[in-house]
Length: 99
Image (tube, rainbow, N blue to C red; front, top):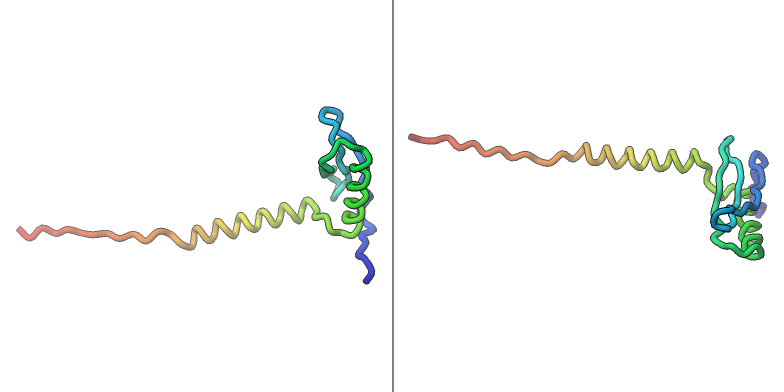
């Protein structure tokens, strides 16, 4: 089975944050810069994790920003409609004096 490769995506670059020395994979998605932490300060481990991440990115297995935002928004919207559909039942008791 051939892997799905997206030719529209750019490959990521390995980047180390100066403040905490943690390595990240950086890439552009729909014109926006994104970062994914590789959770290590060791360059050798970071390079191995980076290569794995780059393979997943090129295969289209990393979700885009817009897809994640749409899914979150639709889930939130769906949950709010469920709440609106089920209002609490109101029971009103009327007391009428007989005197």
